[in-house]
Length: 358
Image (tube, rainbow, N blue to C red; front, top):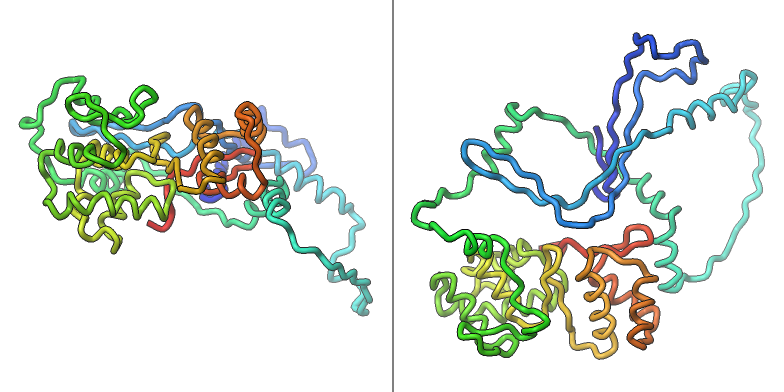
C-alpha cells in the first residue's frame, strides 16, 4: 500500500492465486501477472464524515478529510502492450552504432503567461497529471487493532488529562450543544444576541459574554487582549480551523497577552471567534466574509454563499450566481477571491481545510 499526500492518491497491490483453476497461464509471458493494483479516485464530499472506535469505555472520534474509491488499475496491460510493440527484432541500446549522430534542435521564444493563462494551465489535466507523477509515493504499513503500533497510537490519543466526568454531568440537549455548537450568527439574527435576547453589535459586548460563559477561565488581561489577537489572525489568514486558532493564540507574538485563551473549551472559543462579526463558520473552518475591499468583497460574498451549501463549486456555478445578482468582475478579481478561500482540484474549487504555516 502506498500514498501520495498532495495528490491524495492511494494504490494497493493485491496478490493473485496463480494456483487457482481460474488463473489462465496459457498466455504470453508478458501478459501473465501475479498481482493486480487497486487505484483510488476522490469521491464527492456530500457531508462531513468521521470514524470512531470504543475501547476500555472510551470513545475516540476522528474526522475524515476526504474519502476515496478504489478501482482496479489496468496499468499492467499498458506495460504488456509496450513490450509487445518492440517486437522480437527490436535492437537494444547496446547494439546501436556508436557513431555520434546530429540532431536538429528547435528553439522557441515563449511569451510570458498572463495570470489567466497560468491558472488555466494549472487546472489542465496534463498539468495535474504531471504534478502527480512527480510526487513520490509514501509506503504505508497495515497494523492490526491489537498490534503494538495500534496500542501506541491509541495511548497517544488518550494521553489527555483525565477529567472527573461525574462532576460535569449535563442534560442531553446541553451536551449536544456543547460538542456541536450552533452558529451564533444566523439569517434571522445577523448580529447575534446577548443573554437577554437583545441584539448585540458585531465585536461588541458578545465577546466578553461568550468568554464569561466558560466559567471565568481567563484573566482580565487575556480577556481584553483576545479580540485584537483574533483580528490579527484573520487579517493574515482568511480561512482557519479551530486548531489554527488555538495554535495562533498559543504561539504567535501578536497573541502573547491572550495566550491563556488557547485553553478555552471549544464552544467558548467558537463563540469568541464568531463574535468578531465578519466570519462564517462552515465545514469545520472559519471564513472571513469582509476584508474592506469594495471591489472584491461582493465576489467574496458569492463564494461564501456557494460554499455554505456544499464544500465545492465549479466556475459555471459562480458565473450563474453572478449573473443572477447582476454582478460583473474581472478575471484577476475572481482569481484573487477564489484562491484566497479555496484550493483547486481539477475543474472544481474546494474550500480550504484551514491555514498553512500556523
